[in-house]
Length: 150
Ligand SMILES: Cc1cc2nc3c(=O)[nH]c(=O)nc-3n(C[C@H](O)[C@H](O)[C@H](O)COP(=O)(O)O)c2cc1C
Image (tube, rainbow, N blue to C red; front, side, top):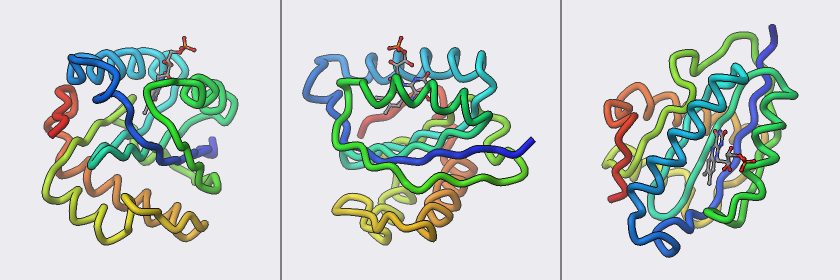
């Protein structure tokens, strides 16, 4: 089955909104993992320097249903969606929602691709973002169930 993939970036508002921002982040991940698993959606969320980038993959209707909730979520703002992609096989098959928080490896990528100051959201960049996130998930996802905010 072709995988529909949706990627976006946004600005994290959790730290300003919740005194227990780590706890809130953990709650967000718990809810996301349960709902994604139920809908056969997989993906990854990366967070660094106040910026989220997320990739969701699965059946198009399921991904869009989840994204409808994400779009309305007050815990982030300034969502910029990349052109969607379709590919043959799931890339994040092991993760209902992998999570990678701040790390040296992530910071280098964020800097290189100007994720902080404005990623160039072209179709080519959607592929580049996918490769970045896959690399981070493979190397840094040991913290997967345990968000580190800084
Ligand atoms: C950055 C970010 C990423 C999120 N990722 C997901 C996700 O992958 N799956 C999911 O079900 N909810 C995700 N959520 C939470 C949804 O916005 C929403 O709270 C949740 O799905 C419950 O849906 P409901 O509010 O419509 O009941 C995310 C929220 C934020 C702020």
